Structure formats: C-alpha cells, structure tokens
Amino acid sequence: MTNNISKLASNINARLNALLKKTTTKKNNNTKQSMNNKWRKNYNDEEKKYYYTSLTKPISSWELPPGGVVNNSPAKEYIIALSGDWQKIEDTNGRIWYFNTKLKDYDWNAPAGLVFTNVNPKQEITNVKEPPPNNNTAKANNKAKANNKAKVNSTAKVNSTAKVNSTAKVNSTAKVNSTAKVNSTKKNNNDTEYIIGKSGTWERVENGKGNTWYYNTKTSASQWNAPAGLVFTNVNPRQKVPKNLEEPPK
Image (cartoon, rainbow, N blue to C red; front, side, top):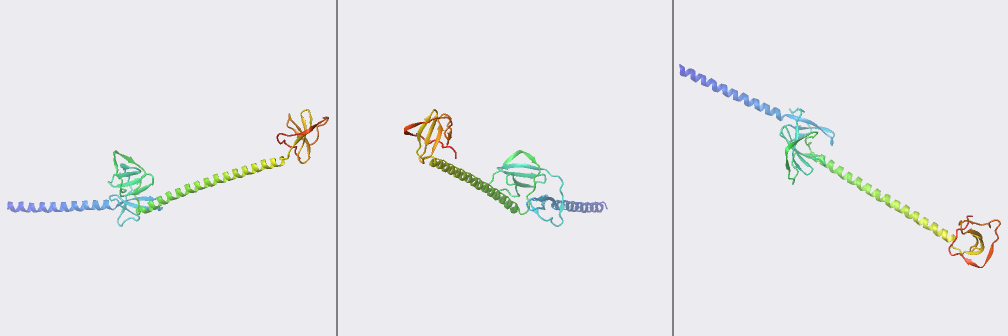
C-alpha cells in the first residue's frame, strides 16, 4: 500500500514539473515574441515620413510589421568606438549601428575598410536616430547635397572671376579712354608755341595756328586778352617755348 502511494505521488510530481516547465517555456516564448514585436517609431527628414526600427534586431521598416507594437520608451545610446568621421553607437537594447557626423549618414553595417578604436569609458550621446530603411536614399541625397554645394561654389567662383574680369575690363577701358584723352589734349596743344613778347611775369604766346594769348609764369594763369595796363616788348627773334603751355579755355 505504501509503495503504491509513493509511486502515485512520484507520478503526480513528475506531471506537475512537466506542466510547470511547459508553462514557463511558453511564458518565455511569449515574452521573447513580445519583445520581437516591439518597434520604435522615427521620422525620416529625407523622405518626409515615419519609419520603424526593431528594438531587438538591426532592421528597419517603412511600415509597422503585422503584430508589431510601437514602444518609444526612453533608451540611452552610447558611442563605443570611433573611426574618422564615423561613430559606432550601441543602445541599451544591445543594438549597434554607425553614424557619420559629417555626412549625417546612418548605417546598420560597419563601413568597409574602416578600423574602429574603442572608446573607454563609452560616451553617452543624445539626439541620434536609428538607420532608416533603404538607406541608399539618404546616401544619394547626401551625395546630391555635396554636388549642389560644389556646383554653388563653382558658380560663385565663376561669378567672382567674371566680376574680376569685368572690373579689369572697365579699368582697362577707363585707362584707354584716359590715355586717349591725354593724347587728345596733347594733340590739341601739340602745335609749336613761341614767346613773341614779354611784360614782367607775363608772356605773349603764339601757337602754330597764329593764335595769340597770354601766360603768367608765376601764377600759371592764361588768357586770350592782354592784361590791362601792360606794355609788351617784342621778342626778336621769337623764342620757342620749351614745353607746351596750357591754352586759355575757349
């Protein structure tokens, strides 16, 4: 009788343990499945729309997967390694991705050919996002931005050169015009001039056209009419003026 009771009790314990193990496994599987269905909702500035990133896997999706649950509970991110402009980031959920501080480019995969140096201790970082789906779009936009910037700089350089050339052309034209004006003045006054009379500091001058005018050697004044009250003594022979004098205005 005692053996039967012991055997029955042993069977009951075995069944209870099996049931408990099955219940625990099912609970763990449900918990794991629940975590796999949790997604963070982010906004992509390039595409102007929302996307979702798994809290347990390094994947993203433009649409919330079937059965997925949005969980935007606060999570901390840390810089755990560096390589040039690239940062290796890990969050409290154990996900790792890469961010380029210069290009503002996110990627789940490490850029090829880069060697990262660990950061000890790891540095907490804020205002970072997980990589969006189809990240090639973001890369293409970054490349387009870089090309546009180069195009703008090139245009500015051309405009600057054109402005310099235009200024140089204007200055060159002004210089030519100024030279022409000087040459024109010289041409008008290029006639041979002679001193044919004197009175104190005044000289009576005759140009090659036979026109007579008067010049004051002290004040450099010139006029067509003889100064009042002066008597000019003729110069014989008349003296050639050593340099062209400024004729009176007409």
